[in-house]
Image 1 (cartoon, one colour):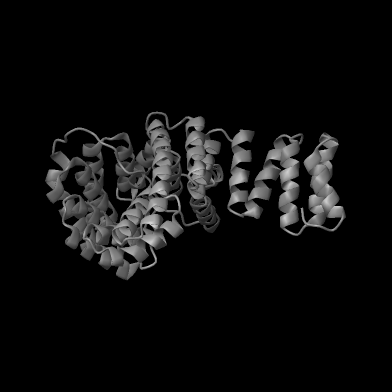
Image 2: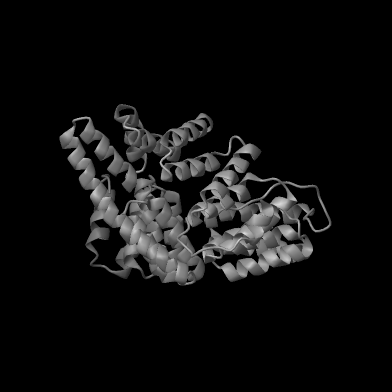
Length: 411
């Protein structure tokens, strides 16, 4: 099998899920000469990892650079830099960092896996499979096997895809991602009962997973078990109001159950969501050819926001700001998204960042005052609105909010 993976000739390229690209691997290992042992440097690495997970890419990279300077010749800071560059789709920089890791320690866990993920993004499937095979030579790991399965699935090599997913599950019987990927493969082949059995196994491990619940509902609908599918699909549409497929399937289920009026409303919503998803897909494709363009990331962020997918919009704006950190429009839009998410702390922090660069932005002062008022900080709200009026004495919003505050009312 490993020889087949490394040397098989591949047919044409196709679209690949972004989730494959963003996979990262990492595990503990015994200290070695190339591994960070200095406590202060390890703290920098930990802080950089946390910043990466929070989507603070510029801060994560700065911390990783600091760690690399403190401990030259160690692999963790370099590996972390590769992960950061991969997340921001700076694939050339990521490759350089991973190659440096390999020079220091060719068996460092995760490095070949992540090179494989980057190759997938470029559509270099044969290269990716070779990298995943090399990762598996280091240690058994379900992640590379699952990625191998997805590539074979994309290429239509069903038996090899199934084998890879089975290997992933054999290595980790709680690896939900592999169960779901295998179930999707079987669904494509029309093996709905077998697919549902796999999803039920995934549900035993993560019953609250919305993705698992969607697969349960979708497969039950496929099998004509509408009454059983209904609660799953209703739960998914509540949790993911932007999710096109769950709305469409829910509409079909309601129709078959004789609930025509509800069905029409849900299917109309699904039609709206299809249009939103078409915009998102267009901008995602644009990123594959121009990942270093901050405005391409911002355009995708706008499409996500219009679809109500605020978390993904925030992530895309953070990526745009990594490439163009001083762009005030991006920062303002990011602050607005935090406001929509009711994350007043992050919104206030972002507005302050904007005002440090340009204290003359009146609308930012107005919005900052609103956030302080919502946070029950009336004096800070007053100061913000007074700053807005100092910049623009005719600003009606600031006057109105300030008057309400002075009168003891809500803003």
